[in-house]
Amino acid sequence: MPIVTKLLHTRMRVNDLDATVKFYTEALGLSVSRSHTSPRGARLVFLATPNSDEEIELCQMPAGASPSVQVQPDLMHLAFEVENLEKFAAEAAAKGYPLSDGPTTTSSGSVIAFLDAPEGYEVELIQRSKQ
Image 1: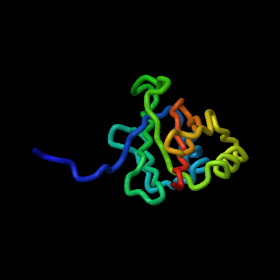
Image 2: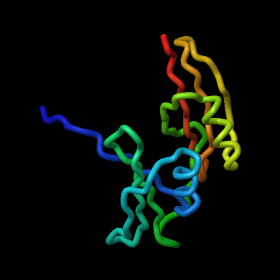
Image 3: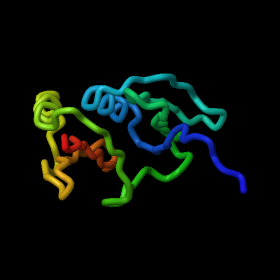
Image 4: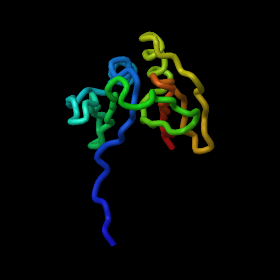
């Protein structure tokens, strides 16, 4: 049975690539690792996450090439670990990105909260329990 060897990236389609890149770089501190236009005319931006080999690929299709993105509630989210959720939330809010939910302490003692990214995607923030 063949097996995969590594997760390389996750792709998310967006309507406003510039606003989405701004959110992930400003609110979360991710960095653009590369960008280009695909042979089909889609604008692509890859984001690097600290301490991870996997990337997030953001894709904006050319105008009229496909229907606009309509993200359903609770369809999917990305989760990121943070050292200090309270401090992270304060800094994100000061940049215009307030928490949309939480913080909430889980049964394991971790603390979670959410930010709303452009297009309706959710971003989960997790401060792991120090136990």
